[in-house]
Image 1 (tube, rainbow, N blue to C red):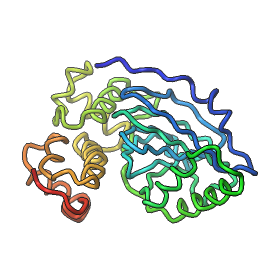
Image 2 (image 1 turned 180 degrees about the vertical axis):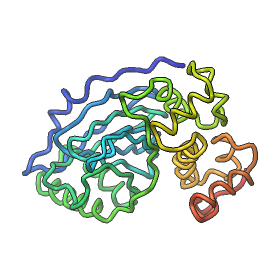
Image 3 (image 1 turned 180 degrees about the horizontal axis):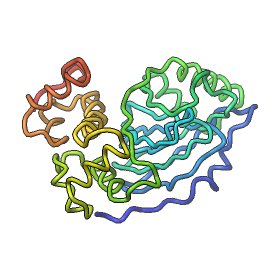
Image 4 (image 1 turned 60 degrees about the horizontal axis):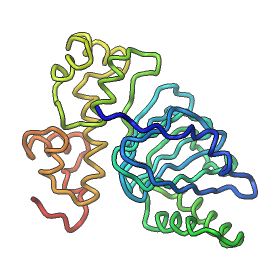
Length: 276
């Protein structure tokens, strides 16, 4: 496994971008190499994790009173809302142009106590880019910030979260889950992963039920959907998405997808996509 590039502790250097009641929306733009990461931390303010290019994995507390963690796959068409105080970490899956919006707790939309995935509309994408054109006159910054908040309130939520074992749970299960999230198409079966994490297939099956309340295949299906939906939205052909997520055939992938989502994968595919 390639060695991850540890980035500076964000809790310390993010202070310069702390939002205030008078400046409730702050933007921080960074270029992050693949496999770099931010260790778990938390802020007093809310955060919108978004990348103009590349793919992130954001792991965060579910929030809203739930202590468990959820992993989110974040392509440019999606963003993760991280509630104030929620513990979270970031792992860069593909080289990314990271755009982080820090939002004062006072402007958190009503009912947004937990973390969630949002669809990034064309308008929100352009607003983020406009905020990145520093220096900005204060009146323009205030107008752009108000539009960002309005667009967030109307953003479509997306069911792309993948539950993870609790931080104090079995390390072997945690290692397996993180490996599957990084490479969902590498090994499809639980037996295929078992030897690599030092546990028997039977032990891992028991741990999935005990710590995640589901079987391995049910959990892996959530991982596949989390990876597949962004690929389809980018226009990647269904057969390529099936191969990338470990399915031997397009038909098997399509059957699983339709059963889980109620529509075939082509329904979620960007217009103009062409089968390979």
